[in-house]
Length: 442
Ligand SMILES: *Cc1c(COP(=O)(O)O)cnc(C)c1O
Image 1 (spheres, rainbow, N blue to C red):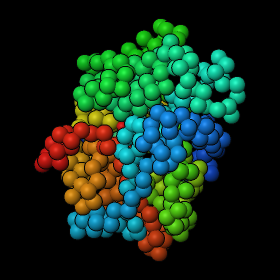
Image 2 (tube, rainbow, N blue to C red):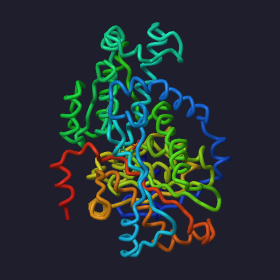
Image 3 (tube, rainbow, N blue to C red):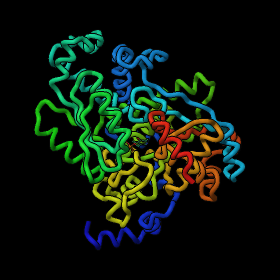
Image 4 (cartoon, rainbow, N blue to C red):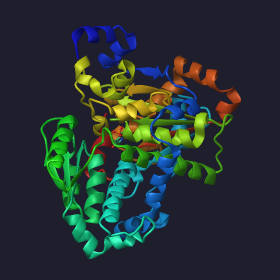
């Protein structure tokens, strides 16, 4: 980026604070009504309901390869858990939350143990179905998908590759699912990726290629290697509509869960959702799905680490993928390894530009505090990336700006009936030793 252009950008005090690595709370001036914003974007409700239908077609296959999905009949979904003791603890520290507080436990999603089980699994299954239909392994989309588990089908998949670049969790999801179906899975991993994730992938039959550089480099190399091979499919985290649609199925799923729990969401029962953001696909897709399901009654906030606030930088500058955090002097490093991304996805950024309510950035130190507090109060363990989601909740409920936004948007009555959901995006696969270490950190 040119120096003059950067100097103009840095005139914005908020962007300057972001560039200095300060924690900020930002309300999106471009947010519009859900109806108006949804009309402008390139995906529709139909794309998301098609994704949901595909996931249902594959449920018998998932059930066969992942018996742990038996309770939901092969559908990969996570529990929604109310956390009243955590709410009390937050209140004691000065964050008084109007309404009820829940954690959406995507760390407990079967197969991949993180939010990536939504998008990643869907994209692999969609690719498998497309191949199967075009090569006659399935005669039609409503054919019995268990045919894809026969030795012949597995032999067919084994001649084909699925590749992906990842900081860790996307690799786990794509690698585990592809290898389970019989594909040759190749995962290109950045230096931030944790050793245990590489070990787990190899144990599940995926090939792991390691890079010294960051996520961007892993993606670049993975893409180049995949493009050189006609039998290889590359999962493109930064531009994938399939990943996005897979994440978006969370909207209707959450609606069903809230219905079952007897929790209303409408203008007088607002829903606030807090989502950790890396490249933006997962929180973006979920935001899109939630807006389709609940319209203006849901308000979505992103959270990023102060060291790698690529989406906020992309939104503030309007440059999305064309600017990286290193250009404004940040190092892109954070212990929230799932969020250690220097450049956001332009696709995700454009999708949520007018749907997103706001965002907070968080220091790494605060992640440790949140991680321990959730464990001490509720016995729930989540990984550091997931902890970022507590920051916008606290900013909304405990800062003057946040409280002014709340009282300006809803009546006190409506707020007292609000539901807050912290989207806990990962954690169940973190090995015991590393959990202990994370819980000990001061
Ligand atoms: C990937 C990931 C995110 C963010 O998803 P993006 O699509 O990269 O924005 C958040 N939390 C965890 C645990 C993740 O693995």
